Image (spheres, rainbow, N blue to C red):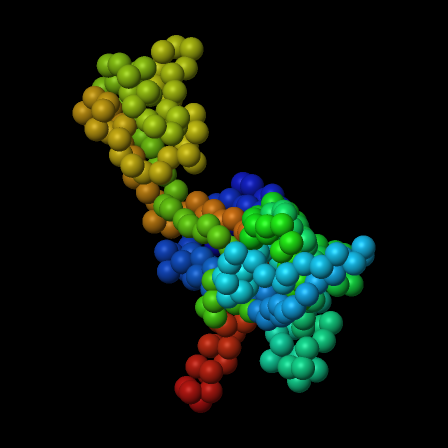
Length: 279
């Protein structure tokens, strides 16, 4: 099996996987979505009663939204995650009590009138875990309203809840194979313009050519609009274009490395169990 990296940014990646089966590639997709962990807000404590600012002015501890809705919105905010630093809470040496190795603490202290954003969720202690997406709106506060919240983030996976899903978009397709029969192309320009994704073009000699092969999504529109037999498009069932994006809690590189290691461990575990069963 061969793997080529076409794109690898902080939050997205495009891979070319060759010599694999759809089942194997789909396993990678499922692990990225459901089994790759990230930190997310799990527990939220709301201060009840009067809140005073530094000048002694009093605010009412209330907001237009129910506490449950605010807590849910906080849970969906991407929390920066270091998988080498944090443990699952139930597997931590603290016995699940909560410690710096399995939890992150955040605070929101805002007074109206204002809009409370994700950037107002401040980490207590290590500023490396400050939320990167700072403009996600949470709630609007009116005059004399205030919000004092303490939130705890823990490690989890997407199979438990979508808030622990670091990969937001993940999919793959067969690698497109495009064959052009020049003898049957009567109108190269019309044929090239029929592709909605700009895969086809016309060269200086007026010939129909493939310009952006990997943009093809196998829709077949060009075969319908071009002259009969002028072009053939099909997917290679052993070669794939694999794309995914993260929500920013993990880099694409970290998510991919974890998913590949997870798959490797599972296959090794299966092989060991099979060896025991066979004897």
